[in-house]
Length: 120
Image 1: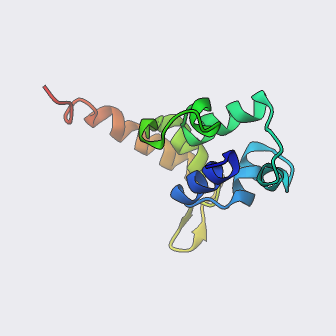
Image 2 (image 1 turned 30 degrees about the horizontal axis):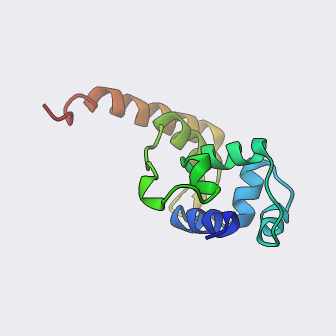
Image 3 (image 1 turned 60 degrees about the vertical axis):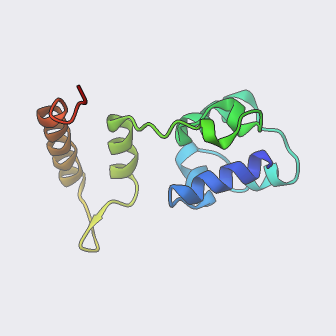
């Protein structure tokens, strides 16, 4: 599987279009499609992609099997990523103030209950 195919699969798994990925990472509009034609991504771009998808560089380069992907989520990054891009409630876009309040509320709930679900 090529780097492009892996990126496409990761984007689909996270319900993101390739266009949204390029926008989120500040890449050129057709950058990811250039990878389809054999262009090799630079180290900085690979690092951005790996961080964005929470995978290793080796996975993106095809040196590591998909089974080794860690699907860990950093709560702060998850909230930042998801609250800033397309968050709606009942079809209405959230205001910046509503997004901030939601972020605070979810963070408080996390810290209040995080120890409750730890395994002994």
